[in-house]
Figure 1 (cartoon, rainbow, N blue to C red):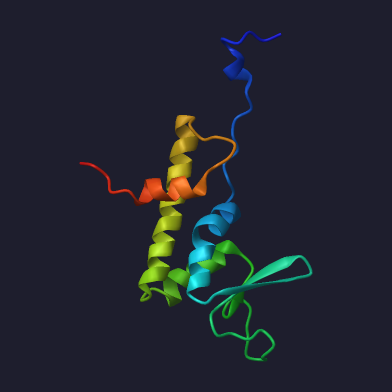
Figure 2: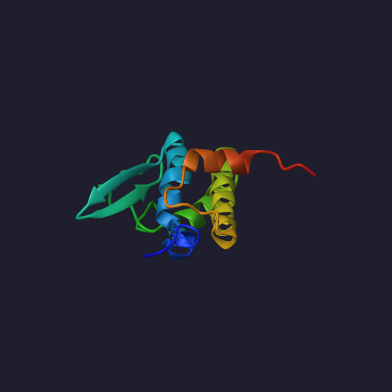
Length: 128
């Protein structure tokens, strides 16, 4: 029997959300507004650039469509570097990732991350 005064010592530590979870909550909705689409085949989700038809022969993996979050992030950084909304999405994603790491280090990370609140927190101007 654990007494309530030390029960918190035995609570399981909250697990850091993985990269895919953060991507789906933070960045993917914004990329969709820019025309990106997703398609699931055989249990694999592909993220497709705007205007790309996967049925066409010219369509190439990791150039026109992706299945890994790091590849999508590289694409946004390189090919979309002039698109302000894409860059803002990338900055928001990176800020959320960093804030989650900070929360984990400080022990304030909870089981259920409210991504709407997290995004508001990282978008709030910092006081000097």
